Image (tube, rainbow, N blue to C red; front, side, top):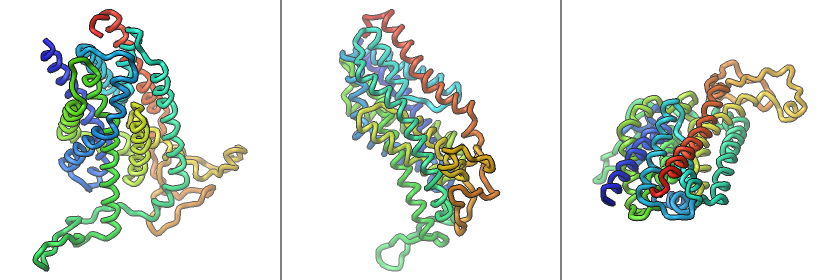
Length: 392
């Protein structure tokens, strides 16, 4: 009987990991694939490796919180399988509404529902987690504002990320040992920017593993007769990688939902910011959504970029009658040899609009799902374990 339930749990874990891989791989590598820097197959392979690396190292801290910190008892194997079911259900609802899946939040909600039903919820731990869910979007937003207002335009007119025709590298066979050299049309700047894009993608994959591997593995680790942590991490990584090689190909082709509307350079700023926030909180053992930090950083960069024509003094004094602020502006298309307008100066005429990122309805939909997703998994788990207390 135990073996059968464990097998069902492994299948449920693979299903959750498979869907995580489909969404997180697209967000992580979509911009790089769209720019022609890496192929979809290479992206999926690199994603799988760094997801494993992130889950095996930093992800253990999150797994410990999910499996032991939120409730004060050990789960039964059946309860762990039920929690995985509620996680999968929350992901399904989010996918139906076309919203990036807040997997970590859904996982915490399902486990918290069990704790409420059994009277074993650690309120101090859950309060700390929820407080970080509130603070993280604000941090991502304001870091994005600072980048968009002060840093991005300065970098944008100095760095040109383009891919030339032909291979990036080639092998020279002048001596007995072939040595790598730049491709026939590759410049040093192109090589440097391409390498930076690739490294940032690896960093984001590591962050995705640190935050998402525990979501597919923890419900089976903290259970009686469950899996060992190392085994659960390997299974979760396999499932995420499988999703990356299959269903993620479609999301990578569209260059990821939010990131498809902004240039590659802006996407890189978003990736570094969101990955850093997620990795730091995962290291601290806080289950956090990479998608949450990503979306709010995108909004922040756009907002900061749009408000450059207004100085801080003008904003505080509300003396902006003669200044037109384009709230749909993401980046100005300055050429590399042009200088970005200073703070308080009008923007150039060639401004790339991004109304979707500032559409209040879209923002409300995202935030609503971040509330509805974990709330729904909490209520469903609470009702289930309250009706069937013997399962826990």
